[in-house]
Image 1 (cartoon, one colour):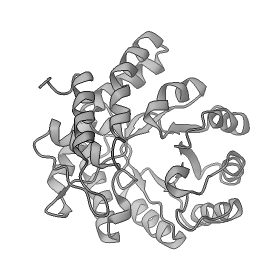
Image 2: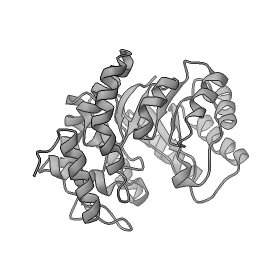
Image 3: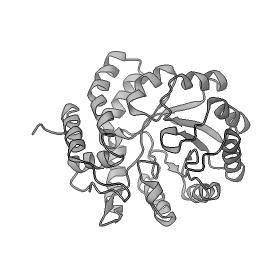
Image 4: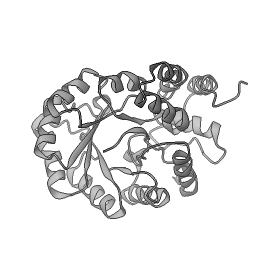
Length: 296
């Protein structure tokens, strides 16, 4: 269903409020540079500090500005099942192609609780679901056997997974349990290449915010089985992947975007703060290495 370089979009702020003008420019730039789909209101979009009204406006603007050029996978995750459903219902009406639903965080549900949560969402909305497993942030781990059970229960409803577990063996676990057609998307930029070799279709990426063209070219090289070119591009992108997490995300990627575009502010919402001087130096060096910023 989905493939390629898919940026998990930042949410630009200006004077503490959603900067709609900058976001529209970001959406257009991403599509022009080759991104194959867009994800508003994910972790990188600071969904956890958006009000529901802001959350829905960001999704609405993304869908409106995209104007059908690429699919929009709306971030709908919550640690409250009813709030996740609220986001899904809004996104369905707004025209999203799917909902990205993270495993509930903080509550620490069991695997049975995860099955109940995602089953409820699948049974109460017809918007396709992309599961999102990122135990480093949620603590809860969506185990392969749970993923397999959910997809088998709702084969036309739960259509993909973004896996940020860091465990590459899971790509094979999912493929062996669900078949090669099940859509697996990498959630860790630095593992994009081996994830693809194991059977992944692409990446929901932080780095692609700042380097959309390079990320799209990288995915094209993978799809063409051009390993030499894929490795060359991976070497350009690799320092940037790590620099994006040299401080609390998404502060580094917002700083990177502010270095590339004068219409992007680096600000994040509390409890996050703008990235440190050390992180800024790491980001600048990585941008230079990737050819996205001139050496200073």
